[in-house]
Length: 165
Image (cartoon, rainbow, N blue to C red; front, side, top):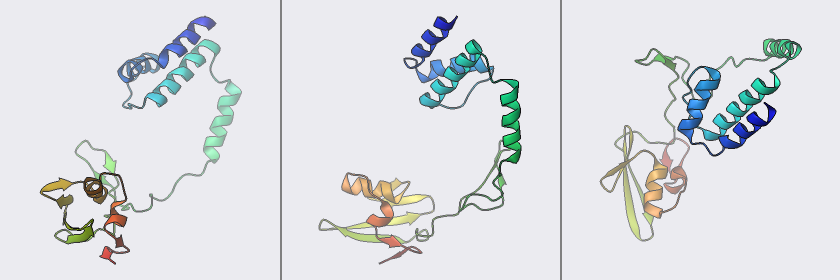
């Protein structure tokens, strides 16, 4: 038995994500939504080892429960989140993030000289219009212009409250 689960552990790293998700469902009795291969391999490896060598002792379970009861819970929402949750069509509640204060209001045209040409980017409600194409972020626009990744706020010289300096 000991040899068998070790072979299964070695096979996990050669499996694809869809195979790992199937193995996870088989071992845990429920599907998983994640596509993170590293996480899946670790969780499945833990479960295989627990099944082969035994799970936590009752004493360890009680201690973990004691620690969980004493743990501090987050009482405030993450910084930048609006405190009022909104319901999505599926009934799930999400926190809406406030827009970044560095981004000017929609309709604003950002201009910047770069390598002898003047760049003009229009701020939209959901993205940025540059050269007839809509980009999701200023960093995406900067990458399209320069060919390499750079911070869009720094590239367009936006500081503080969306004022170019």
